[in-house]
Every structure is written in structure tokens, then in C-alpha cells.
Image (cartoon, rainbow, N blue to C red):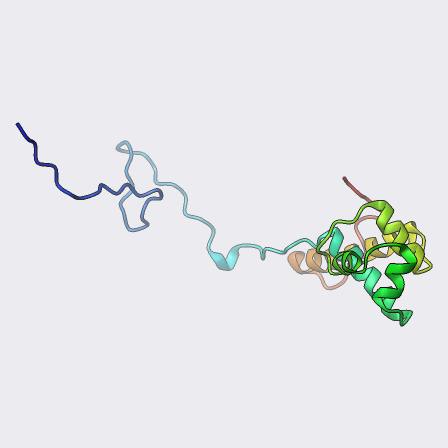
Length: 147
């Protein structure tokens, strides 16, 4: 006795198709429609701390008209690693940040305060745009770091 099985795969969709009618018990209310795109708040990518710190290091180095090699040697950091920190590709330890800041004549607190200022400036611009305000002061008066 042989049974004939068609050579077709049964496809079960993972997501319901939008044109497919709602299935469910009779009398059940259909699910609420999602918020239309024009009414959704704009999604804003929060700046990364490593990008902010890297920008501050690079800006300070360029303001001092120093090369990456000079600062890396003074900080006793490899030049490729310092370059990656400046570009925000590496999350540097506090020791590396302190060494890089020191090579630029800054303290670690100075470096972090400048990065915090950039963070406040960038995030207040996004918050103001979402709230429909023109200009606003910073929401926080201090520095807040989480590890």
C-alpha cells in the first residue's frame, strides 16, 4: 500500500498579511490600527558617549595643531588605538582616557565635562525639536555617567 503525497510544501506565514481578514471569535473587536507615520514622533538616535569623547579628543588635538602620532606617544597609547578612540570605534578605559587627556594638557574631569556639554547640547536640540520648542536650557545641571 503506497500513499501518494504531493510534492508541495505547506507555507505558514509568520506574520498575518494585511489584506487577510481578521480572525477571531465572533463579536471580537479588531485590533487597534497602528499610529500613522505622520503622527509618530521622529526617532532620534541618542549620541554615544564614545563618539562624544572621541570628538572632544580630536577637536582638542587639532586645535593644538598636534599630530595623532605626537599625542599617542605622549600618552603612551598606540597610534591606531588612539585613532579608533577619536573616531568612536573603541570604548576606552578611564586610564586610556586620562592618559590621552593628560597628553593634551587636560585632566580627565575636563575631558568628561566637555563631552557632557556636547551631550547636553545635542540632546537638548533633539528634545526641543520633539517638544516643538525653539531654545531651552539644559534639563540637568550635573554630569551623569553610568557604567
